[in-house]
Image 1 (tube, helix red, strand yellow):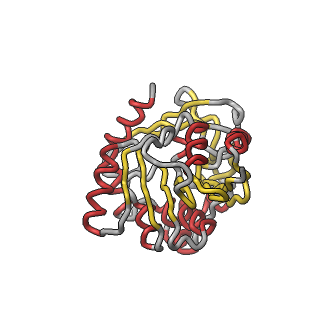
Image 2: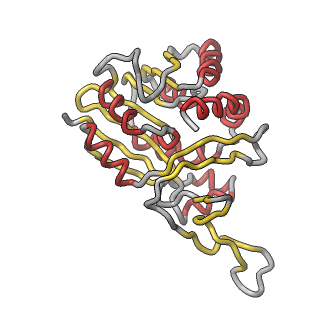
Length: 267
């Protein structure tokens, strides 16, 4: 299963993904991961920003609305097509391109003040080359800020069986309903390719994508080898609004769902 297969997965998922994101159904993004990411990004007005794995452009548009000059890239032609359609309607000045994050061939050296990657780096098999390309297109002291599912607490599935994740049961003999009792972690150091089933009821169509588990050490080593210094990190927590509106997010106060990492180009 190579890059072309993964691209086809996302091409096939495009319409379901566009509905999921644009109709406010992705509350993990809207009420937890994005607030954490944008808090770390800070003031981005007038910055030149490259958004890697931009998909249909949701977060690219948010950054452009905040005043940034944004270039959004994705390897899915169908995703970029939908992003371009939206750009015609909103006219935010975003430059969308179909590009592989491991080979940003049409982007010049030292072009951007910042590179962002919202919950996409885990889906790229050759993440080391992506990080090297990020370094190349950043100006000196530029920032690479990315979010990923927290590697320590991803749900792990092997052979159709869950070997890590929440364990449910009755909190006491008097309780008739099951609750999340504790979270198990196993096989953390095992490298693996995961098939991710997107089968939530709020999706108009179910689909599957591919992701790659890596340890925090592997991410840190790849950043260091490319010339980056990890400067900050934040673990995602849901907003008060999200907790009130979406009870499922309460579990994310016990175990962090995602982590945001900032690395600075230092050499």
